[in-house]
Amino acid sequence: DTGVSQNPRHKITKRGQNVTFRCDPISEHNRLYWYRQTLGQGPEFLTYFQNEAQLEKSRLLSDRFSAERPKGSFSTLEIQRTEQGDSAMYLCASSPTTDFSGNTIYFGEGSWLTVV
Amino acid sequence: KNQVEQSPQSLIILEGKNCTLQCNYTVSPFSNLRWYKQDTGRGPVSLTIMTFSENTKSNGRYTATLDADTKQSSLHITASQLSDSASYICVVSVLRAGNMLTFGGGTRLMVKP
Image (cartoon, rainbow over all chains, first blue to last red; front, top):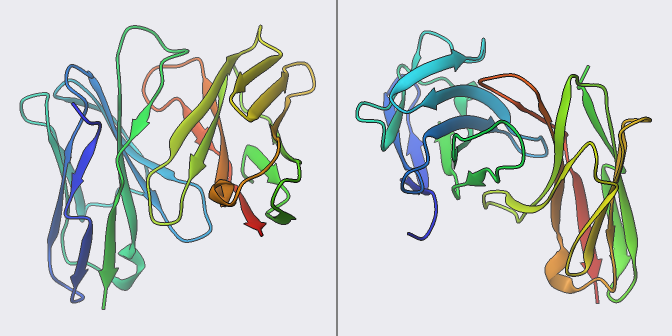
């Protein structure tokens, strides 16, 4: 396993279109996170899964955003009716579940979204 | 107000020189503090993780320190290389389920030849 995989790496879309990003976490990592990052800023939390259960969502995750992890493995993040303000890099991360401290959280390379 | 503040925002140094990046945090209850390196357009890569009982942690030329009393951490880079040019992000974990991570805004380091 080579790490957290995200695709597509880059997506350019017209305003109003829907886009979907996929994240394949490291095998057997129960926790999966989605973050959004804009240029010059640190990542901002969007949502978090423990296996297939979506346990927390940020207020940044408006009703146009939906994330799923149907079988507790890969996850998808869909953005409906995209707006220019959605342009950002969407980062996925995964980690083991055993305890709350000390586990390395591994990030994917991110999916860049540009809304024109 | 961000609960994890990093300074400086950006830094330019000459190859071979040392530098120190700072991180102050207010999040609680504190669990651990992580430093990540993020190359432009890439995902963050973990450098160090420290719990409240650890004062220092090294990873090659990177040495992180933590003072849990003053809620301050630093990342020292020794004998900088051109490949050290990146953003360095301080991330503090809290003792709760779910979203544990609070990210700083990062320090953008440029190493010049």
